Length: 460
Image (cartoon, rainbow, N blue to C red; front, side, top):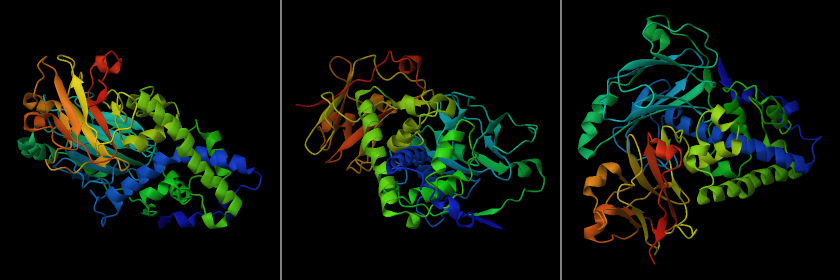
């Protein structure tokens, strides 16, 4: 038997909007869209990575480890604001049948690594790695919401998800380009296997899924087909008891797990009201939050984390997916964001030049390492440039040119600042851009706010 999004149609539920005013339809649509945007964008990426083997972004089949023994470049376009500091490994978990056992090898103490577990809501529900479990080899079992078994012998930790589909991002620190063979040796020892394989028992059978083909990423921002995709994804996300009333409201516009959302059945008036709801999610709610990001009132540390940490703040969860989907919880990594210069003006490398100055002794406080990465806008992707440099990080400090006062000045501009300063140059595009600083395993001074990232100054 094959599960299909088209086999769970309920015509009575397709458009349950007759008792609602058009304003109510707009308001509910906006709320449902903000709630669902991370779910839909996550589903798109999981489909590309683990289901569509014809896609250039495909990594591996479900429940298999995919190792990428390189860092991200401008050719990687599936994920916004990608990290280019650490080679990745990936696992896409289908936990409907049984848990998956992960094996992690011994990793040298001075090499930072971590595994980030992300559920279908985009909550970071658990971590393994240098900060949380250490660098000693271990076995971890990842279980879905329906698993009720006992923990087998030899398992060091059980990691339980509230959704059936989960993603794990492994990040392993690369010290320098010559270190890549060591990364390959570590990655070759990462292992994922079904619990039945680990125990030597018969594998558990599960129904095959006829996956919904995601709408293009650009259409997620405007198309009402968004809700058809959202309804499909929600089938594999058992309802949370804090959201019962919310799901009842969404059902009034045909949004819910397994419901058939048919745009063709909407009247022109209802269709326009729903499209207005999507538009307002961007132009009103997200736009207001974006301004708070630019002023520092809201930071990356506020928008990534567990369900308990985010307290069902769906706009924060949406902003995390938009600004940098799969960003880490602040205890694991912090992301000071530069969208404007010190005068509050948007960054643009067409003719502008910028500097970022660190006073001696006031570099970002981290237990692992820090970096500064350049992204062209509005794509939020890495910038192609003649020296193939997409970031500056703390492993490069010995090569940086020091100022006369012992500090370090970084140059963010489209043209080289000259050979004498080129070691400190982060190439910018000839157009709008943003930069993101990453602090891996931040120290308390970063977490409590006593360390402040310096402003980005326009060279005048």
